[in-house]
Structures are given as structure tokens and as C-alpha cells.
Amino acid sequence: MNIVLTSHGTLCDGMLDTYKKMVSSNSPIVAVGLGDDGVDVFREHLSNAVKTQLESGNTLILADLLGGTPYNEAYALFLENPEHLRVVSGFNFGMLIEVGVAAAASDDLDAAVELALNAGTSGVTAAALPDEDESLADDDLF
Image 1 (tube, rainbow, N blue to C red):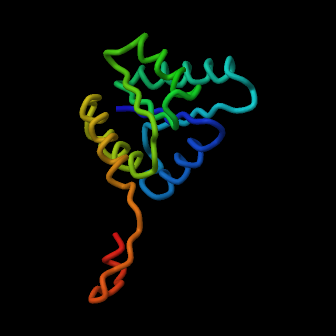
Image 2 (cartoon, rainbow, N blue to C red; image 1 turned 90 degrees about the vertical axis):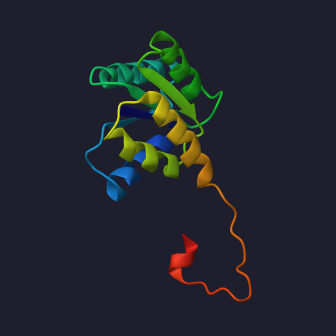
């Protein structure tokens, strides 16, 4: 399965760069950010990236913000090809790691969407002070 990251500005580029450094530099993931060139240029770049990814298999688009331009444009592409394309909004790095690793082994879009939703929320937490009898070993932080 292929992945397209899309966001306002360069958020998606930074996420992809970090993914390549931490997880895999050989992955079927591309990034398309909405820059200062405007929506029409962005729409063309996103459409071209998605079409290229679809040539080699099912594609999952991870967008930064529900209702934002990157998501809306991705959703329009999904409506054109619902059999081979899915869109998930609100991506974070934990979600990208989980879905990126799974994408190498599976082409199942519905499973990828479920994994993305679970991974995206399970990694969001608030830090809490340890109980008095707990130590702060590095193993306890993760």
C-alpha cells in the first residue's frame, strides 16, 4: 500500500523526513504540502501524487486537519476512486509509524484506516507524576 501525507505548509515534509530517518528511507510514502502557490497549484500536485501512487497499488491519504484544504482536496480525490483510496484526517507521527510499517506488508485499506485511527489516538496522552513508590527508570517512560 502507498501513503500520501498532505498538510498545510511543510508539516507533512517534516513528518516524512523524520519517518525516513527513524523508520525507513525506502518507503512508498510521499508528501504534498499546501504552500504559498495557492490552492490550484496544490490541487494539481496532490492529484498527480495520488495518481502516481495509485499506479502501484491502493493508497491511503493522511491529512493534517479535518475540513482544511488538504483534507477537502484529498476527499474529492477519494470520491473519484473509492475502491483504491482512503483518507484519514488528524495525522500524527505515531499514526504514520504504525501505518507506514504496516503498509509494507499489506494492501488492505480498511485495515490501514482502522490501524491509523487506533494508533493516532493511543499515542495521545498527558504526562502524570509517578506515585511516591515508583521510580523513573527510562523503561517506565514508554
